[in-house]
Amino acid sequence: MGNHITRINRRSAPIEPRRDIEEGGARHNNEDSASSSRGSTPEEVGAFLRQTDTSQTNPWLQYVGDCKGLDTFLETKDGWGWMFPKFLNALFRGVGQVVFCNNPFTGLVILLALFWADLFVGLATTLAASTAIITAIIFRQDYAHINAGLTTYNAVLIGSVTSALWFPLYKIEINFLIWAFIVLGAALSVFVNTAMSNFLSSFKQPLPSLTFPFNIVALLLFTCLMPTPFPIVPNTSLNDTRTPGVAMELVARPVDPPMNNSLVRTTRGAEAADPTIVIPTDADIAKIYVPNDKDLHWGSTLLGMLLSMGQVYGVNNLIASMLMWMATLLYSPTLCMMSASGAILGTIFGLVFTEAGSYGAVYDGLWGFNGILSAAAIGGFFFAFTLHSFASALANVIFTVLIQHALAIAFGPLRLPFFTLPFVLSTFIFLQMSATGDNLVRVLNITSPEMHRREYLHNIRINSPDQGNRRDTTDEIAEEKELVLKEVKVIMEEAPKDNGEEKKTEEKSATE
Image (cartoon, rainbow, N blue to C red; front, side, top):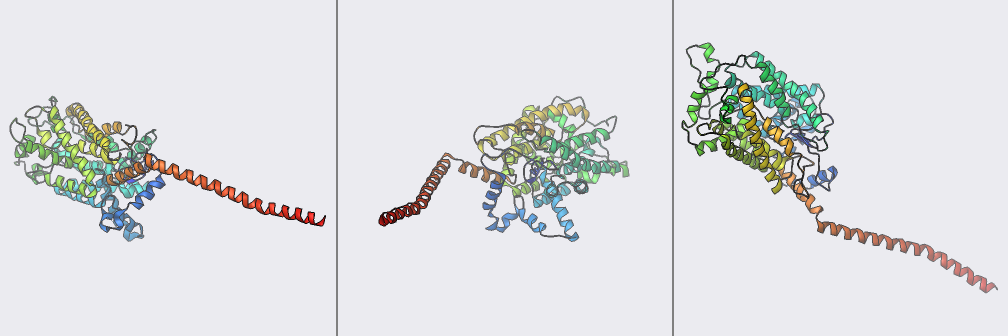
């Protein structure tokens, strides 16, 4: 969701001069960060990254992380025949940028997972992402940002989340008007992302746009198109917001129960075709896979942690979620670890606000998906991975859960999803943190968390006191050598002059 610096990665770079092509380079910007590790210029960082590039010893490493091998290959290809492969590269990277993964193979796996969860969701995601890419090309956005998926990831969420939540929320089939607004929202997200990136990059401490553009466009879309008056939903009360579980079940019921992958797909449109067919209610669906008692079941809670990854894209499907976890691991083990930490902590901390018997939101993964993004953003993506940034990431998750609880209560009666707004608001705050020394260092050149860690350790090494002393000693020796050489030069220049004067004196004496 998003971003930030000189990278082609996710989320935050202004799409014009971009303050960072950060973000996209990848969370994708974009995104960010403008403060840099102390002591290194962008040129030094680039040289360091080239020196530490292990892809030369292992060719397969070119295709993990930011997958620079594919970019290098495509950059050498020109002509109309290569436009479609380049288009797919940008599209898949945009899908992955939602979870800070600037890798086309990661994005492809995630897109296939969305198709598995629901055909309509996969189609809507592809349509929205394609619309954003075409819009960015028409309005001449920076090619590096387009290629890195920075102009696409907000549109990806507009397509997946709208198509996934519209029917469960409002019990209305997705019609031509909804499809038209998905296309319109995807196009508008490009403009909103550019504007937000440029605005946020003007701060003293630049901020990435994250998924803020998606939240703005999606909230407008849902508010303008939701049916009025609200349809009556069996066994639910719009006024019952005592627990976030009730509010969030109203806000984001699952697209697909994990134990019945075809239920929603086979019932869409069935009521119109045959009035005798009964569409399952939320309560009926819940009975399929949620324990029907007031006790907390840790097995279902663990399932909710796994489902959290799918909920980032608005889908509730176990197989799809597992595919997304594997895709994230392919991009970066560190990012996957931090995402898992966010899902676990967010889910467990969400239990604090859940009354007995109202664990549906916990089991559905609704408490963990914002935590995934919050932990990944702070714990290795925008800050170098350290013990300090790890602790800050966990604090960010807790603060995200607090915001989510408040927004669930506020948005529940309106039947509006809170989307990824808790993650955005909390991460904006934590990205403005600072710490003395090298404990909390914003990344200068955004690539993958592993490379951020390498760069951090490199800067620590060259700025260490011992290294500084060695550098000072070397400078002193060089200065002494320079002084000695100057003295020798002066002596050599004066020597011939003195000898000449002595000869003249001797000749004069002899003559006399």
